[in-house]
Amino acid sequence: MLKNIAPYIISIFIISALFLPSCEPIEADVAAYVQIDSVNVTTDISTQGTSNHKITDIWFNLDGSRVGTFEIPTKFPVIAEGKRPVSISAGIIKSGIHDFREVYPFFKIIRDTFDFVGAEAIPYYPTFEYKEETKFWIEDFEDPGLKLHTNDSINRLKQIIDPNNQNNHLGHVYLPDTVDAFLVYTKINIKLSTTPIYLEIEYKSDEAFSVGILTEQINGSYEDIRPFSIIKASPEWNKLYLNLAEQFNINPGAISYDIYLFFATDQGGKANVYLDNLKIVSF
Image (cartoon, rainbow, N blue to C red):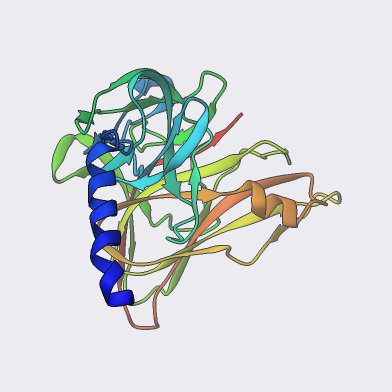
């Protein structure tokens, strides 16, 4: 019985399909793209120091909502069409720890309008600037006197001419095999603050060295706190952004704070450390 009616049912479905209205295919949203191959920083070198940077990421917002964080160079999709407001923030590796990424609070947010079209890519080259309210302490080793102090009778931090750029000066620490440690420190009496405070430091070193804080106590004495950052040796120039406010807040009882750099070798070893463009930046 079923075999006899099956052909009629199939025929009815075929005939019905012929008379159904045709449907246009539903088009999914087509993503446009933003392509950022590199970023720049511009500074007033007389008051803000060098424009050297190590911006690793951009944080991208569309219409005030976050799209994502992208490591440079990057090309990423954005579901958008037409002219739309965007904002771009500069991202860094916090205190040299690759898993800790954050927006650097001292750079202005870039605000612009992008015209998104279909699947096309928009090439963009952001240039960041420091915010006007940023304050700087700078040791770039260009002035005759050094701003870093030591209690060592022989100051092993020397100002030298950059062998790769005769117009630039560097700080050079050399520890011979007869000296296994050396320390330098700032003397600017930084006050505890709830606002961000960072140390920017550029270096090249064949030995690891450490960064720590000195605290001025109520009785006028100074105490050195254990180093909060061990900077690994680097045969090439590198730049780090070290969060100081977090360290100050761990020790809130001090009157003021200073930063020290401690260099050491195994006994009988030698060390060369090159420094440039140290900045303590705050609001």
